[in-house]
Image 1 (cartoon, helix red, strand yellow):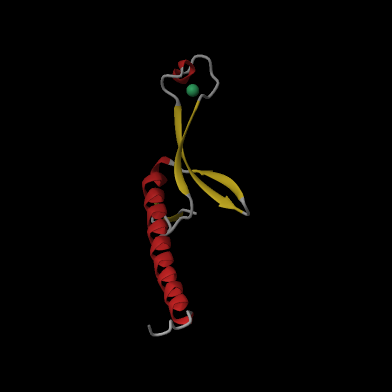
Image 2 (cartoon, rainbow, N blue to C red):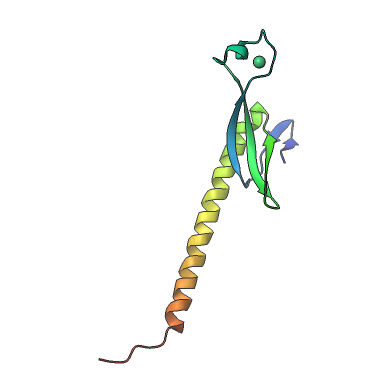
Length: 102
Ligand SMILES: [Zn+2]
């Protein structure tokens, strides 16, 4: 998903899903996470595919660009839905039978 261009990871313009932070214990008894005070954090892209939720771990250098791409997708999707809803409302309006003059 992230293509390297000139050794820099380049995020796609749009990503469908959500960037979610996972917090977990690694299981090593001596690790800082063992007490539960400082858990390991991994940001993943959560997305659905064929009705199933999937998770794709993001490398630290991918997180900011990934979040931005998710935000652009949401904004573009909302704008598209607004236009499509307006078009639908217009179509419903013109197809409605004319009301009789009072
Ligand atoms: Zn740990």
